[in-house]
Length: 213
Image 1 (cartoon, rainbow, N blue to C red):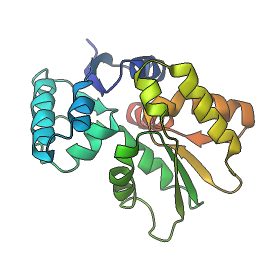
Image 2: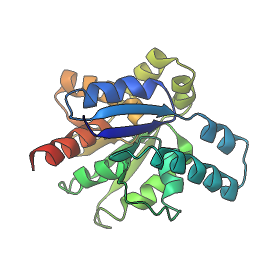
Image 3: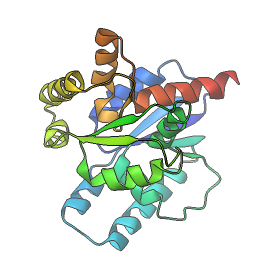
């Protein structure tokens, strides 16, 4: 029997992205979609209430005794970073896998976000992985994250693609910080020949290293 891997998402659209990334991996993959945290954040409930909700949800997943848990929701990740969750089960935060990839290059970074609420937390954590002298630029694309959550994926992807096409990528490392942009980043990379790093490239690298090390 294959070991169980639980993937925690904020949108069911992320399931398709991860299925494509993990289909050759030796895990039974169980997807859990939790949209309620975004609702709590938008209602501006207190940080303590948000953390309490996440703690309860994570304990529910831990009780299923998976081999590992992969968290793809950046809102979850930012809040998990502020908590002490004691467990022997590895909890992979997908953006940290991406940060590990960024350590291998010293080029300036251009980092695309569509979810404004995660920019500060993600960039603060990124600074733990890269040199403080390394130049990094945040490129925020407004509105499109709401389109993605509403299922308007084509409009979302077109806007992200247009933004990538307009970027000056010469001698820069371009990164999409959220899983929602991974597919269109892959398409752009194939069309342009310019590699755009994403959470998907990071998880593939991590899993291959895990299997073949």
